[in-house]
Image (cartoon, rainbow, N blue to C red):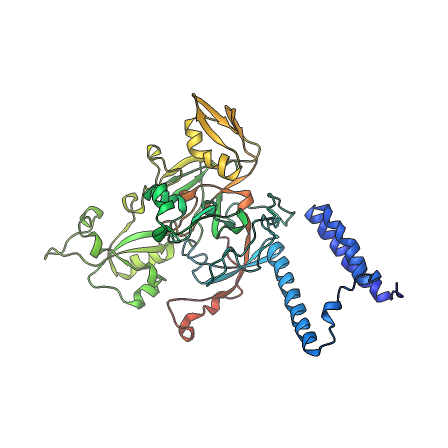
Length: 466
């Protein structure tokens, strides 16, 4: 072994200390087997680790330098993306006006502790599918179980949280983005979904960490009892204040003519949210309290999402002849979790429902099976069946079940335009990704790049938790 310089010992000591700290944090002590490799790289140098980067051919040496730089960058991005930060774009209006479509977020995984990946062999910065070529961006083996490393804190009520889509375990690749596999099965039948490849495509399974990322506000904590009454949320019987920028859909009858772009923008309503109701709803406008004109016609009627501030502005400016909050008959009683019509729940009047808590035990009866069977099977990995009047879990008779995970109830601030826990149920703790900490870019798809296309006032802003 050649003489070892002082600088070699310093570099080795720093890297070894950082490596050991990472192993302790991760808790997988078999990673310590990597210490001899680090020692050899910096000190003993028995193995010529860098030989491939020093070929005699100058052209090959240049290529080797580029490959080395690219590999280093990919590895660095992989670990940063895995354990520290992840970039995320707001794709839908479910959290408007707290977060806007086109906001680009930096998500801190340290906020709640990063997860050890279920599928560690994956391409960085790609969630599950390579664009264009449409092939998987990860390898399913090895597959590791759920483990979360120590973080800076825990999920709190009213936190805006990024998580993996709970209903995204099974995916029909050609289904619209707002229709998950289970929605398609309920409406078209399992056989149709599995056999009609033209409409639904292939059916694939995705591990937890490869499911699509969603962002919502956490309003229900483990162990809470939650109920929604006429759009008001009650937690353990106490009214939960609305987020500052929460909005609901309203049926707005104009004073006469169609509104122009300036009027919509005054109320901060995007092009996508300007829904003109008349052409599809003349048959029941009168049921909504909309009066006919003398000639038998209706004024233009819109369904519009409005914040409290926008509603007050509309009530004062005289543009509307009448304003009604959208009733359940339109907001929908269909496709409300747990999809049991006998409960009589809707998006605006929901529950009461108890949110499962780690270590808590429930009695196994018909109602609890309706509410929690997906938690027992899909999220906690058990089999569940009813046979000869008995309930069997993992093949054994059971009268009670104890949860091993904490669960959360997530909702969007755009209450009538949000696919959230009212649509697909609870979010298990192993699906939690992190907390948005910075809006680093915001674009407005309704405007051109040089005409308000970049929302400069939102850049480098902290996502609010009002």
